[in-house]
Length: 109
Image (cartoon, rainbow, N blue to C red):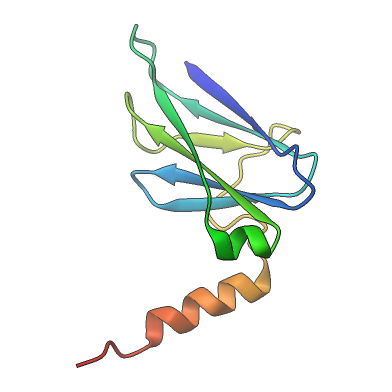
């Protein structure tokens, strides 16, 4: 089994993106999540990408993406207690509302 630990050492939210699924999980300051894959081969199972979005950073949000490169693209993500956490875990209500509103907007003609 392959595993990678993601720690939030910042003072604000850290959004953990799982790709290619486009799933999000939100870590509070000081939290740790582990992404686990069934892959046991010799290649690296994951690629990690840290990236900056100016609007997110202004709101106290940092972003990290874990790309699943090998094995099942549906990894297991657990918190520091070993509990499985799902997509949208701890997503702030205001972010959820904003994203839902964007999905329902009619695109310009």
